[in-house]
Length: 167
Image (spheres, rainbow, N blue to C red):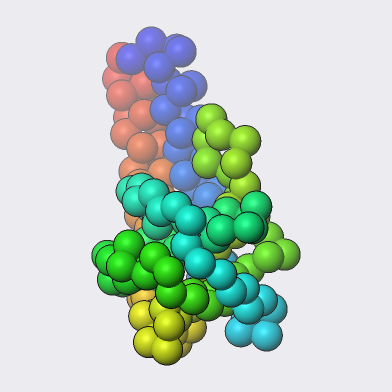
């Protein structure tokens, strides 16, 4: 193994060894990481103007409202939200959105606010409880990912050291 490859492997190993415990710390100190509290969500009402399904969420907007919304796939039930919004034209839609925080997809200047409850007419499509259960279920993967980074980093470092030693 040449010197450049050796140092690259050590860099990857060090990165993995450092990021693994960070992921584990986040999970064990805050298992609901990323999920806003119910009290921090804002009720927004309107009629759906547009809908766009993407890999990681259903993006949509209301008529006479310049705010863009996103129902994240991490909250589960994305297909149900998309179907209900597609069939909601003309009906009043109520959502609970996180207006204090927004994100922009890579390569876009559009800002989106995550949605955690969707009500079309009088029908609850996804409640905050449903969305939070999906979110927390997804977060349960964090220990596996954290330990994978940690042990993977140690493995890469040991293998790089062994190959460097005998090269």
